[in-house]
Image (tube, rainbow, N blue to C red; front, top):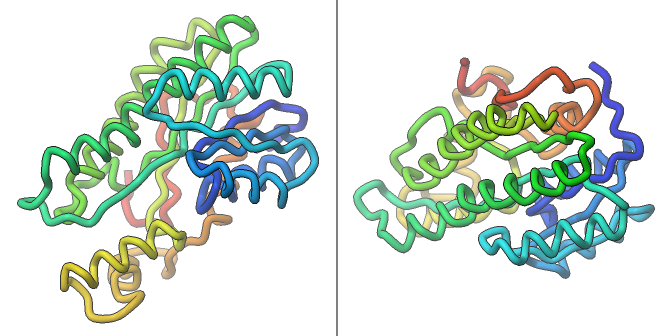
Length: 259
């Protein structure tokens, strides 16, 4: 697999922490020019400063089309074009199935699903205007392949990411824009620390790390993942090595869900 992303101009949303930050770091390490985008601009600036080189921070609310449009315009102004868009920003919440409210649903779906729709549409509009094709990479999840009773609305949002990835791949193929997704499993990030606290608050677990350890028992490789376990696939999906791949969701979960 070629992993040539050298010189590519890439936006990564939700890159102020966790998987997104590591995606941005690995892309930059492999020669890409990266816009580290996040709703938390201070977190984005810290990651961009750590990366150095041609990385810069951009503020974005992925649920707002104007905000996304401004982010893409800033990246194009800085880099001259947009080659790859990572729609990675996402949120989660632990909530028993019977307790999920309309507000819970809308909040999760707006960020995780609507954010991917808007990000894909706006990135594709820029790529079409350039006339040189491009790549869009969406963050799905094992929750986009299986429904879990404590994360029903999160699962619904990630199933939506898989569906949007397939629909966009078909819609944009004629413009030489590929659209793929990757699906992490249990990744040790700030997001899982949040979920761990929620498990304890709901009385579902008794001690820290119990939730992540119990969730990880079915992983064939025998451990939960770190963000750097994901980047081999994400950088590949941004690279020239994935030029003949579109509409696919790559499981990067250590063998939790076999497809």
